[in-house]
Image 1: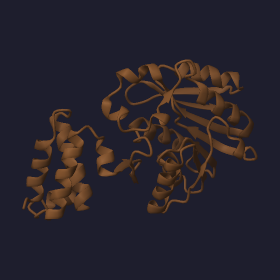
Image 2: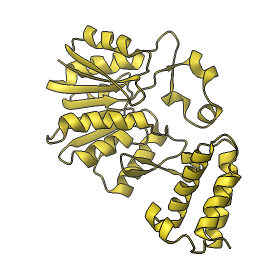
Image 3: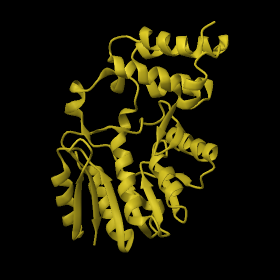
Length: 282
């Protein structure tokens, strides 16, 4: 039987070289925290504690799955997003750090208000749940065209005890929400042209849902156009529309927004210096 410290070393040393040494240590610590149900400080304090045999078996199975190319988050079945621990699996995309930055912007502008919010293409529910958790007086709806994703988002809401309504709706035709008015609409829609698929990593292509990633080469902006059109007619005065965007398409999305009548459009860079977020108002 291994101690916590011995198992941390064993886990990191048995990961293959798709990760560097620092990443291996981080992944090992993340899995030990998850399976031992301890935070980082507890792991350090309990470094000589014996790891139960059942947990050792789970950790060794996790190593095998990670080394096979399965994304770390899917192996663990969980991901941290904006300090929320979400269940995650192949039903939805793994939330990315730049999406947390989009939530930062939303919270920055709407923190002390009571917005009615629509998250289009909610996936795991990460944006909707983080917005509700950080803007408690908000009334948040999340919609998706994939029922499995809606089920996952609902499971996360129930687990976290966060009051968000999740429902079926097609981002390209939000007819079922035609009678609604919103203070804030947000979307991280599919935006990767199919022609870029060949250059993407296998662990993304083999495991994450393509419907949430890709758009036709000849229609890369179709979701932005559809959602902007809907927002034009369903945002209240001074309401906000937020998008996450492809780093090379921000200016094109800006043109779409101007076409649909948005006069105040701001592009914001992520921490990598890439144009990844847009906020628009009339």
